[in-house]
Length: 355
Image 1 (tube, one colour):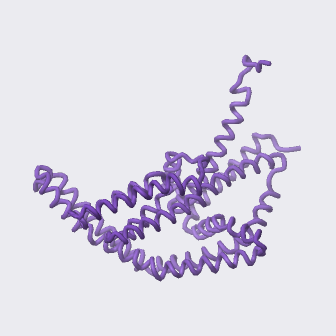
Image 2 (tube, rainbow, N blue to C red):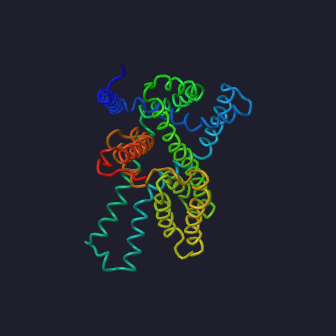
């Protein structure tokens, strides 16, 4: 005899609470495993395509691993040093940029930039804070022996975890399916398929969009001659998954830096602005419709809320699991609403279906 629904909800609630407590206490420890699982999930369709082409799972996983290792080595040799160098230089240049902005405002709006004005003090404070905190943070991250060890372990453990998870992905899915409660297995499978479709459309699709746009912004801005183009492109591409936020942050940062570097050179400033306008056109009309689709089901406000809540509660690991949890909660919410609107609680006894 199966357990009553009330008892099942009690046990599943306990399991959920235990999962959240473990996530709270083991956040830093499980970070490599969360990242490895995300990488394996992202690359599983590639492995499936290679299997359809005639490769075994082991060969497909090996091909993907070697290709990823080559890309990582190229990035580490060509891109990462320049990115770090430009980031440090940007932090160090912040006070100078604040002073130049102050001089510009003094020339154009002298009443705002009096000696004791709030705007003047704020600009000086922001510039100095960015320099002090930014350089201090980078020096701490790059100079601490513990941090270096953690970074090395991260780069060692994540590929190993991703390799084994990618190799055994289908077996793990089948094993989880075998452990589903038999009475509810069809419903759970359907919900899991909807969650997977949402995640696949968002994580794989938006991950590809972020990579393409970040590369486009960085290369285009560097070709125009913007001093910190690689950093701006990296930042813009990184937050592109939040609609319009990536373009707004990247555009404001790029145009702001361009004003100091290209003041008077309106052609270069127009090219910088045009790069982000073209990027938004490409994203909205080509990349997002083709790679993400229109039925993701993750509203931007809901996504920002999930990132804020999980990030504040569980730190960086919480931000990593925020999107999957938001997708799962969204699918479950739609399922509950569907069940509610077809139940007697919603329909009532007075409303009868008419022939």
